[in-house]
Image (cartoon, rainbow, N blue to C red; front, side, top):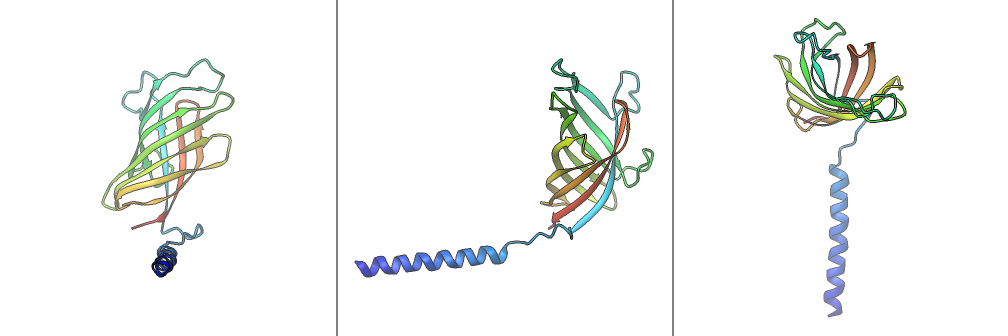
Length: 183
């Protein structure tokens, strides 16, 4: 009986060692200095003010609450053009479709969740992005949590920087997109 227990224990230890070696041998090492794909896009948001139906790319769905002076609770949905340069009228290479809401009572802060939809001759597919937009910071990182098509199962970081801000009417964000998992 002891022989069977000893052999079973030895076998389990050997199996565990082999499994852990296989797992570490197949694990991808990510190098934050060398993403597998990198590009810069500009996000253009024109908030609907009640009169510019033809140009608006976003709309307030839920108004801010009276809890503080920082738009807490305001929810905005958008379908914004993404361009390769910072010109609003440049051809769109993708659309950012999603929402953001203001989630801090004591300062301007929002949380974004959206999909970049690519449908051009260069790229087809989607990237799913989400994260906190701490507006006081010069740059902030959003997580890229997946994708489809040319971006199948992609993961990475979108570093966001405010490129221009014209009050509540229009703002433009520069997005430095770095993918670390590309298949």
